[in-house]
Length: 314
Image (cartoon, rainbow, N blue to C red; front, side, top):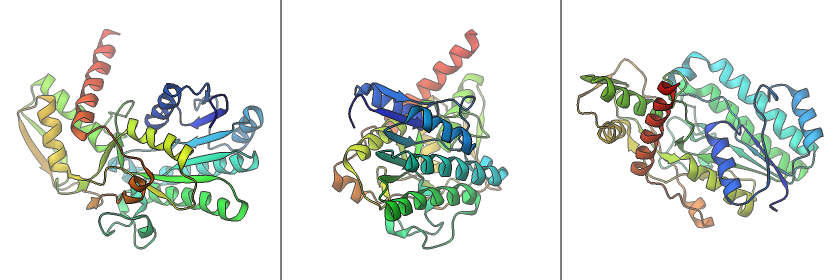
């Protein structure tokens, strides 16, 4: 990608999209564009068509998505399916029609089967039933990666699909309804410290295992893929290492300074038993993440505390 070419980041104001924008600007790309939903609703085919007609982007990074944790996915599966399907279809199709030079689609590790062999290799896609608690979101993401694959196969469209592990970090949602597990834990334990709460209750048993990568590393992976990866096969992106939710909660509690009781609500779902990526292909291509989980949690706690200070000052 040349520094003066137009790069459209769909979802530029979300956690992943904003990280991609920061990474692009840090590398000197001069024409990075995005639109808030008030100006461009990606679920509206006509609006997306008109945007591509007007802006004619050279490259597209599709980071826009409706996202959330287990609670949001269980409550709103229809919206997770519909919103993600329509956004993906509109953006990918218009990128193809407008001869975009390359598109990067961001999927998710939840596309793999619930009982997937661990670590999860790219070829395990569609080999078994999905995790029920986020099936709507997973089906939408599978449709997106397959759309990229089929447009490449049928039309020669240059699209690539990355499957990142659980992401967290700057600009994440910290609300309990829409937040992912790590961000929710950060909020719970920081608030518990500030309010001197004796105990904190966490959903599930704590036995489920997850792999986490800071969103800034995910952004680096996107830039790497746009420059150095051009194949039809999906590509896992992550550390290739996981941690139990119990271990995660204890680490967040410790780093937040919480010394009270940690309790588990076993009536709530754990979700998929384990999600650990096989990232051997990614590493063979020459990419590796840099921000350790401990460093990323410390950074996230600091950012959450700073956001609360700013809120109380206003």
